[in-house]
Image (cartoon, rainbow, N blue to C red; front, side, top):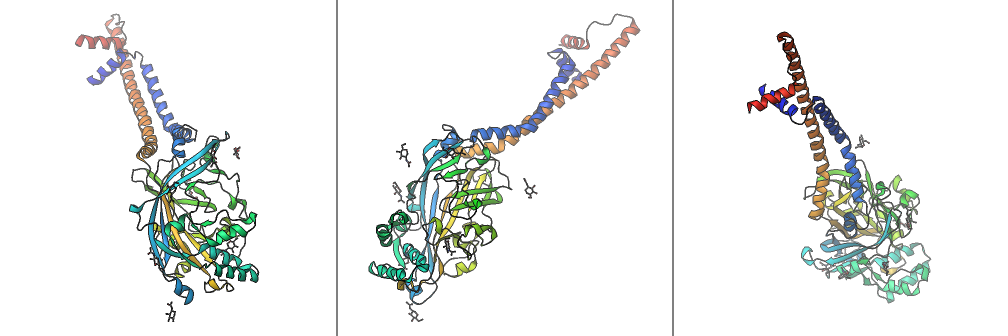
Length: 515
Ligand SMILES: *[C@@H]1O[C@H](CO)[C@@H](O)[C@H](O)[C@H]1NC(C)=O
Ligand SMILES: *[C@@H]1O[C@H](CO)[C@@H](O)[C@H](O)[C@H]1NC(C)=O
Ligand SMILES: *[C@@H]1O[C@H](CO)[C@@H](O)[C@H](O)[C@H]1NC(C)=O
Ligand SMILES: *[C@@H]1O[C@H](CO)[C@@H](O)[C@H](O)[C@H]1NC(C)=O
Ligand SMILES: *[C@@H]1O[C@H](CO)[C@@H](O)[C@H](O)[C@H]1NC(C)=O
Ligand SMILES: *[C@@H]1O[C@H](CO)[C@@H](O)[C@H](O)[C@H]1NC(C)=O
Ligand SMILES: *[C@@H]1O[C@H](CO)[C@@H](O)[C@H](O)[C@H]1NC(C)=O
């Protein structure tokens, strides 16, 4: 009791002479606490949005233009070990999965132009370097794979005039072209001179000409891409942050039957519109995939740097042969079987089909048509991206795709007469980033944890302080008014002039005299 009296005395004597002032400040603190509890989240969102916008010179811009990450691509090649038996005796192809052959990547965006309308235009530059110590084998390992240019030509000639097919057979005879080739892994990826493409370059009319005479599945990817990409910076609309506006000046693909399927309005997989919820569908556009890839929430994960993220992965029916994929099948029906995506229109009409590795999520009969591919396992063969939901930054990614060749049997061409209708797997690869550098991770950690903590601390602290002050002020006010009335009463009874001091002064006096 005495302690509280003293505290009251101190508060009143020192700088807060009027109880009502204490009460008012306390109420203001309380209100401030409540306002912060309600609005701090919004303010932090606005601040994050402001910082994320890709403004030339800002930190986010520098990270976007030259990502401080070490991406890698791991390639697994299916080596055909029984090519002769397959062709001569009709046995199932026996494949031997080799690899991984690991290439590190360096990403850069060059010739960045600010269009002054909330978009930037630029070119991707990617540099690949073989990493022998991370690989299982060297990139000059010889492998036997289907002759993709030849089988593309023969499969395409299926509906051409018969004499053309016969002519093709004799040209292939002269050039000694076989349905399987033995090349090194490096050649299969980065290109080797192909006699058929070389010939095509010389004879085919200019407008149908293939742009190159070498063939490689990653041909032309090492270096600066010729494609101009226009992307939203978030300056005008944060909901389109990092989304492609135009690809090579076009905002739609020409290949498919509906506007929705022709859209290129997706992220490139590195940044997404921020404030992602588990209900959102993310969309990634990749030129080689030839469409937007939808991604849905799978689970909440934590990166090894301790940042919480959402794992997004394509829905199971993404490549299903169903109603909502009909737009990707302009020539059908029949359309590609479940789990295959026909990209031939994007690949100069060669019958390339994409799927997930080991035919994950695909019709099992595709995997059973060959030997040597183990059953798919979601953890090893699923494509996923882990994003930090508040800032929309990809923290970890595994873009896993298998390249297959859909061969059609053509009886008139004797070299391939025994090559049955089959979806022949060629290779699969995994492109990924494992971890962001520590500086980015710590910023993300800050961005995820600080808002909650700051809000709780600030709002809680202010409210607690306000409540304590209200309590104190009210107690002191009651006490002093009680004392005042007692004093007045005394004055009447004793008939002495009451002390002209306010209770506060009196208390102060008492306190001072006691010291
Ligand atoms: C690939 O298979 C062929 C046989 O078809 C074999 O000669 C070759 O050594 C294999 N390549 C590797 C790297 O194992
Ligand atoms: C093809 O099959 C026949 C009989 O089934 C067998 O004798 C022959 O060795 C096989 N050829 C090859 C290349 O395996
Ligand atoms: C980039 O810009 C430079 C100079 O402005 C130009 O010479 C070069 O051709 C451009 N590169 C590409 C790929 O457009
Ligand atoms: C922004 O400007 C560029 C270049 O002028 C143009 O290609 C693009 O379509 C514009 N984008 C929007 C959203 O206006
Ligand atoms: C990619 O290009 C760079 C520089 O042009 C070169 O050093 C590197 O060997 C190339 N990588 C591959 C896999 O060809
Ligand atoms: C997500 O969607 C489900 C059902 O559509 C709904 O019940 C839930 O409230 C949504 N959650 C958020 C965070 O929007
Ligand atoms: C793939 O698409 C092309 C072009 O639309 C079409 O001609 C071909 O028949 C399709 N292949 C399959 C197996 O559906």
